[in-house]
Image (tube, rainbow, N blue to C red):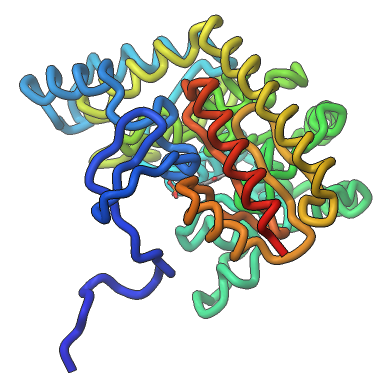
Length: 391
Ligand SMILES: *Cc1c(COP(=O)(O)O)cnc(C)c1O
């Protein structure tokens, strides 16, 4: 029998495909125009085909794409300097993806205690059914049965507690615990926020027990919530933060950010990446950062998302039997339904609005951060219509 597609079957793909994108919109090969509130899962933070990103990419593509990290890369120095200036971070290691960034975060934490002679302080405490990526270590960090099934032997060194189970969390912290690694807002897990007072509590416990705090901001960071990082509102300072998705605006970039203390373990030769931090990626990331870290830009995300949440909550009040809860913050939004969300997402798509699922019956809505108000209104109209027709 002839094989129809030579792509492995590891994705359950929709038939639809796209030939062009502009801002909040995607143009499908079937001729239809879609309002794209997936944006590559919070990756295209500035929408499709942003003129400044195109300009940066074009200009740098004529200069130099890639050189080895054996040499000094000024474009990377520049982006690292900008990140350090705007955030808690003193040092940065560039990667290419979120999973690589979370793995590097784990390595930084373990290596720090190793460098202090605490050779057994290497366990990482995580939330069960969280999401830290798909590499062998990251799936065992996530502690999800579905993600790890068939990929054993189990990677040792990870402990898990359920979201909100403070008692179990405290019980699991031992002298061997090197770090607590959590998503500030769980993305794949259903847009669940760790409350600010819990983040504060986590920081306190970490200080008391000599444990490092890793906040995975791969999905919720880079302006997604209206703050540059989701944790900023709590005023908590983490030790290590993996980022990815939004920082490249569609170009694959990952990074692990760290403070001076923990960076001391990462001496020459301890970590590396062939592609991570190449000039092309660094230039694009730099342009994305310049735009998003601007106060006016972030205030605009706050203002527009507040309006959108207000409208979504109005729909929820009108259709309490369909929508259980409007979750999230800024433009990291989940509509939690009372039942399975598959057909709801399909109906939104029929009405030309693209959204994506998350756990716990959640319809995830991820507009570009520079979405226009009339586009938000368009989405509201479609969601209302689908609620009216939904049974
Ligand atoms: C997407 C995601 C990752 C993994 O990123 P990849 O680029 O797919 O490897 C890790 N952590 C969080 C919180 C994510 O949302």
